[in-house]
Image (cartoon, rainbow, N blue to C red; front, side, top):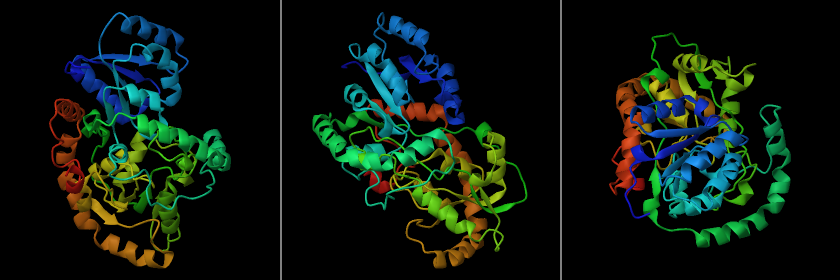
Length: 385
């Protein structure tokens, strides 16, 4: 496209399945307040919605931003866009969506900077990480069971899939200006502060199993159905050995039911530290931002590209390198440093709520489209350079 894209004038195509998450609902409200056009399909089987969308788009030249679609939804949308095109693609787990959309998109919008790093040669996806050969499911639910069972067949098929990925990378469009950073949003209502006594020293409020199908040409096929949250699992398991001896530890895996959002915030506020990692693929998860804004410092590894402010709210521990014998002294040190790290979190809260507000991030997206650099504060200096 030769004409300038104005994101407020685009049609934002969304999925009802992903819009249930709080950090996406607030983005929808910001888009509505700006007067942007939104169209929501219910799921990949929404035949009526897909037909209405096709009728709209084939009578309009509006640029479409396809935001947060699952791969099965992208497949259902293919008949709408295969000839029309004129779209950009915004992603969460960019490694799970197919190559065709990325090849034909005007812009690629990444919530995680590791997608940009992989495409620009800065660092490979999960590069240098000790990825486990096999992993058991965290819960006996269908996708996790199938993911664990499919690991060995996925490894056997990986060389053939990687040959296709190699060809796709050779055909890829190398224009770096197409690659835009569009991180997760946060708003004050999402992370309410309360003055509450601590109940836990360390809290894990995240899954420790992350199985994905690697459909992107820049995500190694050998990682399909590998547990990319193995680092988090190892750190949580090591800390759990000291539960009540002497620490108090909350672990999501021991809860009989899914945490409501209010309960999630309650646990984080009542915890001295949140256990958080970006996984072996070093993704910038919204939970890190949420927990810091709730006043809980993070115990875990640093992120390589984003969140330069995290160093002031982090007690660094490398989950895949720390030994069990080393952990108890480190946990003692973490608790000794809790007070200043918590104060750093509280001091940063207003700044972060401003930086990652939906309106600010939509402006950030437009600025990048207009050719302006990402302002300081979002990326580490070496990344920005």
